Image (cartoon, rainbow, N blue to C red; front, side, top):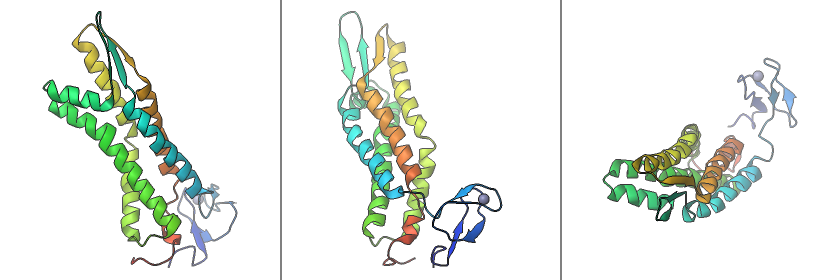
Length: 203
Ligand SMILES: [Zn+2]
């Protein structure tokens, strides 16, 4: 049985339990605004998530940095950067850039999509596992700026290697947007919705 079924809801700020109401009310303990669910949570999550997924394509296809020396100008994509560091004797750095700019963002978007699909279509997934997955992406999301930081680091490292001029390419802007949109999508998703879906699953 969930709190909503028992006619109860909790304050998101202080945890105070109160009678379930449809509209937003002020918490009797802390005065914060309490809603039974985040408004339009699922549609906002979808909108932000789908935009992030679409932007992930140019983030990978467009150059994330442009390096120009006297003679040549080279444009590197994220994968190009990974390959470059792998071959230039920094496999650790290549692995770090790969995890942070490909593995982690893709996993985050996949998990969020699975959770949103579960709520939308009542997929029979284990709810406790769904909640655990949500906590994982919420936790990882706190370090999202690390993604952007690593890309900046990659640019910086190349800069110190020679007297080249480095500029962030359009891919970097797309990548920054992907990170920000995924974070907002996670924030828009109301994990309480997982318990509202039809009770087909165990737990
Ligand atoms: Zn409260």
